[in-house]
Image 1 (cartoon, one colour):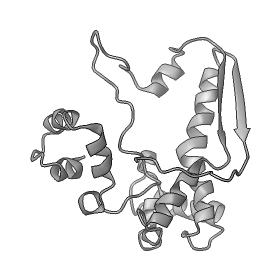
Image 2 (image 1 turned 180 degrees about the vertical axis):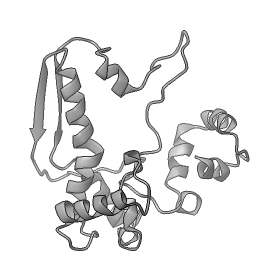
Image 3 (image 1 turned 135 degrees about the horizontal axis):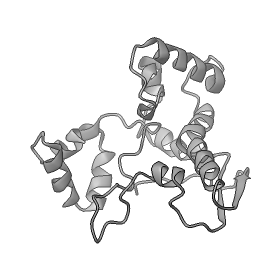
Length: 196
């Protein structure tokens, strides 16, 4: 966040000030800046996306005041039937990042620890980190190079989409009917570029 702020001319180390200043920036400028390598460094499509719904402070105009997982876990959602699911190729958005040069998969060969999503909170260079890397490389990349775009599709699909969607469906199903689908179809236009 600090790199993004500095790239936009916000000179502060105070998180509250940075957040307030970033709220004043047009969203199109934010999206364009977050993909600017000279400001943000190499784009890691595997890691958490920098922009997502925010938890707001309680107030009359607040929309989301608690984390989504907590709301789902406590059953604080509309008790109506839910249709939820995913495709087998959710991670295919990364093809465009790879082919356009927005990201360089060789970065994962030289710094394999970035294969572990920051959301897992696994300390770098720990025994757990090494074991996790070994498991990921074995399961998704068959102990070969981690630069194969097709293996990336499976890897990104699982971490960025499937795991969260399946957990959401599991929590919803405790209080409501859930209709879960998995779509497996490779069409002629399976890719898009997020952040246009």
